[in-house]
Image (tube, rainbow, N blue to C red):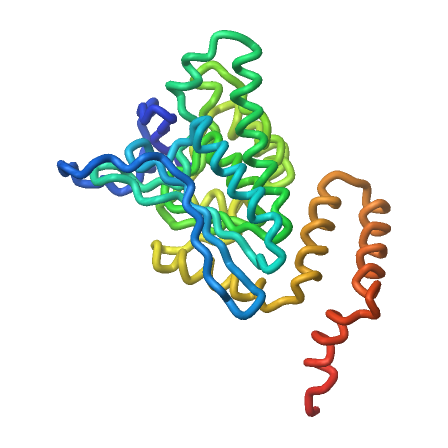
Amino acid sequence: MRRATLVLADETSACNSDISLPRVPQTSTNNKMPKPSISVATREHSPGHRIVTLTVSNPAKLNIVNTNLLSQLIDACQALSGDADLSAVILTGGQTIPGKQPSFIGGADITEMHRLSSSAEARTFIERIHLACKAIRDLPVPVVARVHGFCLGAGLEIAAACDMRVATAISVFGMPEVKVGIPSVVEAALLPGLIGMGRTRRLLYLAENIDAATAERWGLVEEVVFDEQGLDRAVDSWCEAIAGMGPMAIRSQKRLMQKWENCTVDEGVRAGVEAFAEAFADGGSEPRAFMSKFSDRKR
């Protein structure tokens, strides 16, 4: 496995290697710097089926997250959770400013962390990252992480909180926290379930960055594509497919998947039996409607 240039939340390069993102030409701009924000874009797939894109934007700082951005992300996810017509959510990073390399989420704001001076302050800060990840996981529909560029630290935890991940070939993944004197915590606990305990130890103890091909081989991402055009095609294809499924079935499937993460096999099987029975609680209107597409076909 090749090692990548480490980029922390303050954009400090801390190691030399042969993996790096394409160098973006340095250009000057007189435009007023846009404020960090979470934007919400909605499109109708079909009547009663909405696909929403959440964009984490901190263009001057590799889309790193601070307390304010995390709070916005939590609020946006909680608002979407009440949308009965929601079918899928795409989570992505915004465009960085000229001169900055592309980034999904480059980590947590190291300047803000540097100001922490007590256990209480540290607990409040890290709980905000956890609550943002939890808000993503609590969305009742599948969430797809659209990863282009750096996906580091808190960014990787946020990506891990999504249901599926697709990345461009230039993307870089890592958990560099121990390099700055803190452990990788909160939703880093999801990583063993994705890549196994051994690879999680390697990622966290050595603070190694890995390229997209390695991330796919390890199971950290489900698909790697060449560029952003391919990224959009893949993400749109997945979300279009999800939006065409039974909406209650998809929501039930997500609840089951999260149940399976934290239960025995026997408990998971029993939960599945109950979910199947619940699908017919109203007489089976959704299953019957979707099954009729197959049963009514001419053979």
